[in-house]
Image 1 (tube, rainbow, N blue to C red):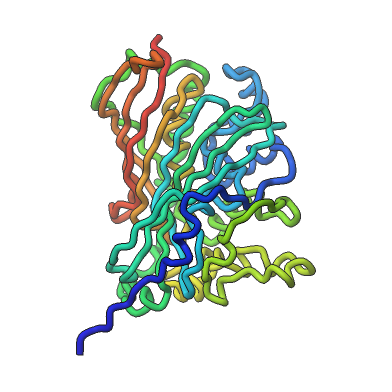
Image 2: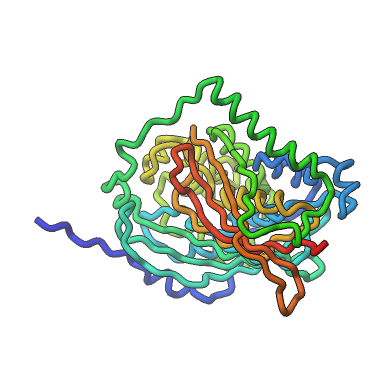
Length: 389
């Protein structure tokens, strides 16, 4: 007997395409410890983002946030515009992030406003879950002076959980890696060397004319990942602090058709906020609770797409140095970081140009994120502006 074709009902999604969206925003201005907590959670030991004395001697003369911090001032990882319309029995994974940056850096005291819209979507069939929607949504980040900081186009992969469980793509996968003490010591040494080079370079410029096509960026190792590291990441998103956010305008993200086990209790959480926490109760509990990871078709605890995107932006920004600026990055995510996994990021300069309109001296970098088995987790391309001399 042939398998009955399962379809994805997107009729409720259609009415949200191109509609200006509301949603959550943080109540309070950015605080210095918000930036420090973010850098700590992303394991980004660049002192520019947590050490006052070091930041004072920088070109900024003060503590500033890494460019990745934009996603931390949003409510919903910048992904809520891509999760509109109800698809009963569905869940989502991050499929990628495209970023455009326009110059202003986020710093303590800033209040950031978001403009959001579901951009488009397409439905295809995947080996993971059969009928699968790839939807793209835009979040524009604007500071209190009306300056556009960045625009993020996030891709959400929405699928039917029952179809993912039927296919059991992850059955038979290797168990969580068991790292030896000597392996962990070697990893820690390589992580130390990566950040020691940043300290040694300090505030000097990485100039455009000194960078050649084919230049390899240093490899960065992150992990091994754990329930503890994923929880630390989650708590660095201020949206998850009780009472930290307010809602205005329209958005259907919280009514997107989540499984009952993955749904926030919005009514009872008014009395007991943990019931709407997301990590303990709600859509994100699968990241740190294996039973719920397996409920939605994942083998064990898994990382956040928004954090993967932040690792990439931090990697590019650390290489560019404080005088450089990421202009654009477009990353496609292929698989998440799982508990026990080690993530590595590598990059290569593939082109140089002078922008005819802006006069900026730009390098193009191709980057790849892999796990310890060299399975590709993400790939992408970025344009970075560097000082000429």
